[in-house]
Length: 358
Image (tube, rainbow, N blue to C red; front, side, top):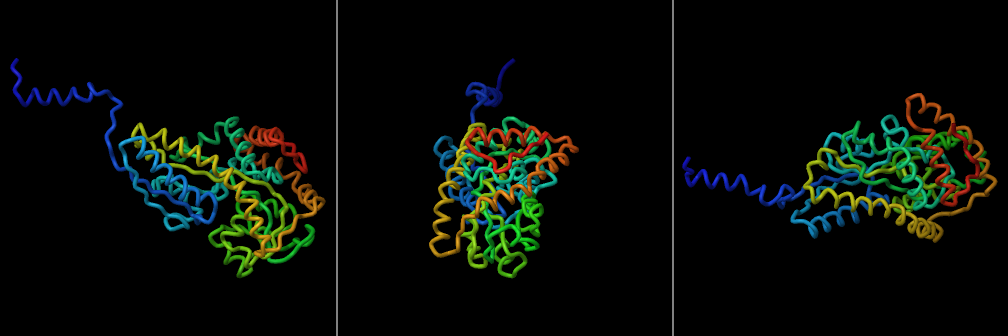
């Protein structure tokens, strides 16, 4: 058989990829849409914008031939706080940061630290506790891929939660019947103590306080400073509800799977660094934000330990009660809560009330 010049060229082109190896990649511009319903003034959203985006682009362009082009949408400009999870799932955005509190029906177990109020106020310890629980309960990671077309890139720790209000209070009785805002499961911290809970979200927090839709917020100090909540809420009481790791950074799974082979490990590496930074940055910010509030923005008061203990006692039966509800759905809630309790103690935390979950 005689080969024509055209056939010889075609054969050469077919064998070229094999000669180069199957792992060869070609330079491309990777276009990524990233968003959060929260503004960059909320610590984790600010870290998404100023660290995750910047570092991922830098690392990919330094270590590969690819370029990164971002389309960003913070403050609800693409998806609101209650839409981010589905936005990632449906591919409206590629990467999203959000609170699990807004997905109580789909991610009910991911708020396990909220089920154990008065935990550690150290965000780095909160993150370690969460990492221990996710390791012990693989369901927490797997459910994103198996049910919701997402890859969990990072868990996000928050600063320690306290209580900001429009008025001064000294004991739990002062709050009876008063409308206080929270999000998702932490509304139970209010309900069981006899306070009137109101579902809220940070983008409308200032207006809600200003118009007296509610008179306070369960909130970490960074939001009280950055969102100027001290204006309608000049009283900030250090009650120490705990630092909670219940936000997440996820990526649309189809988008992740479509990334070049040499990019995927970089995404995971930068996401891991971002996760750790949410703990350390919030820890550093906590003391500086409290100092700003004390510097004239608000009246900051340490709550009497006896009052804190009283509040904790009012919640002592709630973890078991809520666990019983989740057990009916076949969720590994007992494993998650007991791992969290023991991990916190391993890292030096003493519970004001030692919850029992079985």
